[in-house]
Image (tube, rainbow, N blue to C red; front, side, top):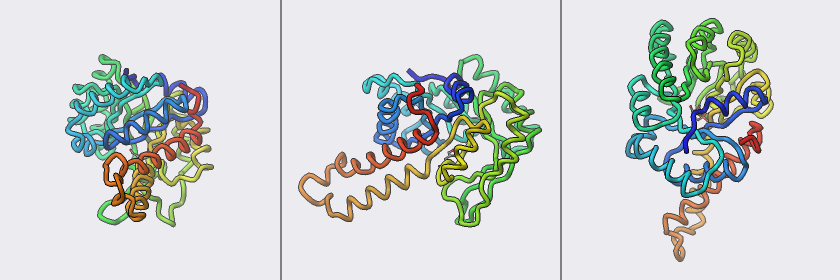
Length: 287
Ligand code: 13P
């Protein structure tokens, strides 16, 4: 069964650890994350971007696949199926498809419009028992080869959005999606502390979990971050393991060309990455 992320994140905030959101792209990816969460007795959030949803034949296919997998694999730890960086329309499509959690990314709208749209979604999610993540302050990342630095959120705007009744809040604190550039100044703990003070018990979300040094992750958790998103690191681990396998010529030997064998090293690499993150975030044994 899929659950809303509300309870797991409130527990994480109170217990000073974070739940990992790992983005999924296909069946193997999903299975690897679910099995690792079960093995470590950790709650988990499966993130689905709109692009990944389209790639997997639509949100309905994703929901049915994840639900069936939880059943067939005997997964008993809490699992939330979450839309990552949803558009306003995408949120409604995921609600209809049976997701248990959504993120509405209204950070590119003027704050008034972000407030209006988030308010609308708070109502719909409350009726259906879904968790809702909102975003304030743009999170940087690579676009057309140029890496944009993350923009720090305004703590007052964070409070304004948090007060609408969202479940969790993603606030830009200098974090970036993808790899961090060599001249990255690090997370702005000053901004995070100011936001934390304003929003109180509201779980905060840290996007761009790939490549943030462990000490900064620990400090962010101590200042109220209860959900950390990881995507690129699993992709890099998967690609690297697959490349090595192919370069070793194993795909040409015997039954090595079998897609199940070809994907196996990548799957193991994802499992190892997820395990490392869950240990760092402190969610092991917290299911
Ligand atoms: P990374 O790809 O940098 O790990 O970020 C993931 C993320 O924040 C998804 O929303």
